[in-house]
Image 1: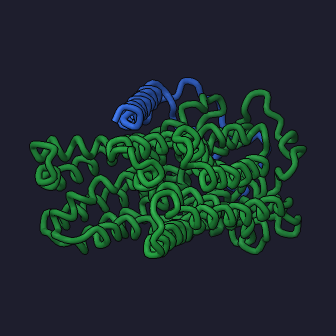
Image 2: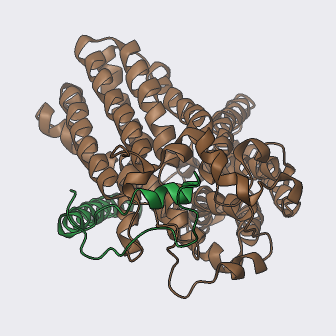
Image 3: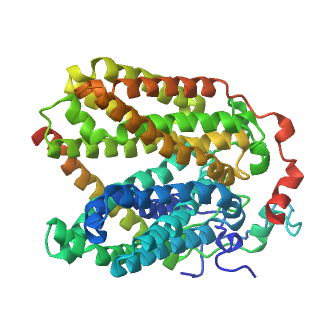
Length: 71
Length: 453
């Protein structure tokens, strides 16, 4: 999943809190997580899985609910 | 060097498309939402273990009780560890729960199903429920209601998916749709669901990111949030929140709203058949499906509207209009099927909306600092309502039946009790005021404290 980002600027905390032990500073100290092509692909696949699963559930439930008017 | 599971390892760059994050949050909620579809396993399990409905019903009850406990006691850890680690831990517990339950099914040991699905899986439920919520609110500081609605909608959606999927899997592995076939397909179904959930939750954990400290939504001015009533830019710790009246007022609000919703959900199928004696079992099952859709739609739609109307106004609607609709059902519900269906659908949409709006309400009052932990502790209201709701409705039903009442008359008293509960919740919501500044965590201390824990 880790790939070069390509779209991530420097992520040092511009508020000057880096290194003080605060959460924001610590997250900034660690640098940005990589969000390049592989990340985008995984995110897209996950979005498709989520949408397809929701569509499946909605259609199946709508079919079941239709029995209220037909059954 | 942070571990790949740590919060520090998943900080997004300053320029990042935040719309990639809801799918990650939905992924885990869609998986753990399966718990609401557990009833599809009831009859096959009763046959498999040669036991009654009550013994099998305890599996679900233990899981929901563990959800509340894990969310209450694990909330602070979830806030400290970040969403990826907590999603991985939640997923591990959830999948391990299925695997242990599978051993119980294979060996005919029901106690292993209690331990696996109920206790171990229930811990995964509690941690998984709260793990993505505060992260989504940090990504959508301009639309926290939309954010929490997106995540918690998944919990309702999980049941919509798992119910037909589990039935299809049991029929596939068992070789048919007869009860004995479904029973024969139980083990393989549990193993398949475990594998699917492991993959989907792992993908969610890979995709989840926390915003960079300097990141802001374009065009959003944080100072505008403080200008709205009941919204604060200050922070309150989870421990301090417990000492505020606001926390307990919201506890009452959630408890009353959930108890009232369960009052309908618990007996939806028999209720519509008692109100309208010509409704067939298949049509009653369709009614349950319709309520599930309303529940899920309410989670997203009502929570999203709360960004515009204000959280307190939304709860006034859930509780006030809900109260009126319960009265409508009690007084004239039996006269018109359309009125009955519409009223119950709106009530169930408010039930879902209540779940989805509460994290944003907490963020408004207590800030975003430990909102996940505070949310976790507030979910004990859900556990309490999960016990109180069915207990009230079923006890009243039994008493009314013993008194010789039939049809719609069976439900009148329990409906009036729900009206009373909603009135209490309405008053509690009206009493909510901004948190006193003495509870606020000093700006310089709050972040340090987060990591000192």
